[in-house]
Amino acid sequence: MSDSPLIHLGSLMRSSEDAHAEGQLDRLNYEQGGQPQTLTFPEPAPYEISVNPLSGNEMYLQGSFEPTVMMDCARCLRDVEVPLSLTLGTLMRYEPSADAPYLEEAETGEEVLVFGDPTLDLSGYLAEMTLMAAPLSVLHDPECKGLCQVCGHDLNDGPCEHMAAVPVEEIDDDLGVPHGSGHAKQNPFAGLRDLNLPEE
Image (cartoon, rainbow, N blue to C red; front, side):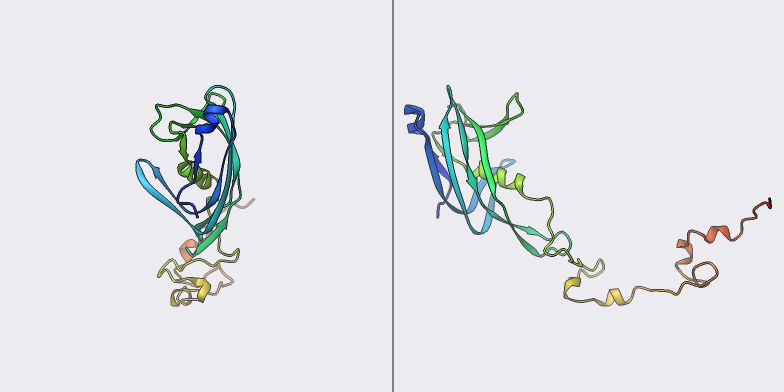
């Protein structure tokens, strides 16, 4: 199990040989907005990466990464394991002045991974690719019933007392609701009762 996804590019930069790295990760430590972050995986996430030289200080990274991320169900907040399969392909550029690797957008609109240390830590890159590939929301089950909006009870485990307390009133034949009902104000036709319409 690798502590961090490192790839050594020294020989590539000296002799134009391809560089390779592979392993498994149980977490990624990276920075976001200047704050340290950790992306933890419930099972080992395998990665395989190759970097090929292009021209000048440019290279091309390609490979695969298969993390499983933990997300909250959008309705009931239960943990949901979301397996991802990422196909990697990113242009790279070596700039000795770069203190830490970062992604920037080229004039073509393509993202470029800029780095300054030939021993490149890909933690931040893989974390960003993972977060971009993850869905915005997930359900633990398509039939998830969600939470009670009053007490927060998980309705997948059964009804709660607040569901039973919701008034369900008989619709009457006159104007849709019994006289004095709290739902009378919600009847869209109640306002027609006192209208005097001209006869044709």
